[in-house]
Length: 86
Image (cartoon, rainbow, N blue to C red):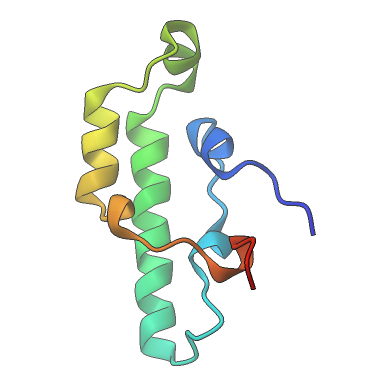
């Protein structure tokens, strides 16, 4: 299955919640936590990310990177579905 580019879409305000769903997440509590995180990320992107400016300057502002960091995105493991080795 071919997926749209996650980061590119992130900067145009499209957030793919499927990137946060892991096969091992089966309980409602954890799924609720992931949905809450996805909502926080989507709100941040809509409110703080200016994709036109990023494209024009060809640089992601430090404030955006710090925002992603504070949302915990830098510490997330990649989805197993994206792994090339199975």
